Length: 430
Image (cartoon, rainbow, N blue to C red; front, side):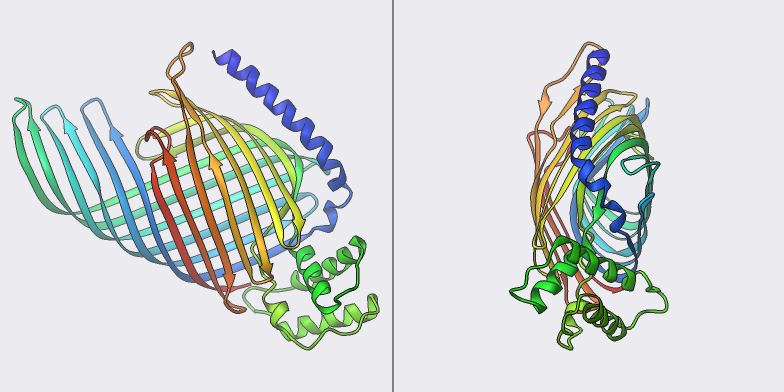
């Protein structure tokens, strides 16, 4: 069985690499034009609603928890991107703290007794996470990948449980208890790999296309002219210092001079609004496929998972108003109790009605199958996640990000069914 799965994985890798090779050729000649360097310092509020579960099991006892939680928290975050022809790096550090409410099921079972109860939680939670991803190119298409994501949470909460207790004689008693507890959770996800292809940021190109279309209606600009304007936008924005700040009026003056002196165009109208609101979230174009080993650690079950993966990604810059995103990732996950195979696919679109807003929608399909032994496979479990996203710039500093998803699954083997909502309102320095 494992040899068959390995053969299938090699065929998929080869097919993806051939497909990316044919698509990446046109990008190889222009990728050096898409420099993108940006740093953000964000502070604001996050409102989230989500469901989760965790388990801790030994030979003597089992503790299981399923919780639906709503939280309002303060967030501080640093986001960084450095995209150059020979390397692409992205990293962020975030800290959150705030109150939350939770409700769900709780099971505490041992050789002496078994408790099955509903729980209600009121508490204060903190969350720290750090993520780093880097792709180092040794030519225009081939690269190595390193990705490390670490996180930790610490909660202080009051729990009220109500249910039943069963002793060793199978006698059942009512169980009610209130307690004050703390909880520490942490984890690490890491992967390495090799890849072919390139996905490049299109933010400066999009801004150039928007501004030229708005201020010079009826005139058609060649792709070379748009690229020339995009390089100038990149030159101006890459000089910013996130701590010292920048002056939008001086940047706009530089941009207006460039249009007049290099493209022989009249100066745009004296308005800073379009320039200040050209800080859309990073959007990409291109294709790549990557594969390699990975491992995940969590101080609950499943505590240590390792395996291999292959992932294909294609993002198409259809126009300055539309992006289309396709991705597919196949992973083999090895665990001490049972192995499993998971395919994660995503088909989505992003619509940009103007420079200040983005609307996204799509569907994720995640079929999974358990592999208990070398010659045995379980039934395929089908899981779907439709989602909506929204990003808006209220002004040059205030941002709003919203994500709504609904996890649909016939069983809880791979994902937990239910809604997921996140709303962030924050002030950004860049």
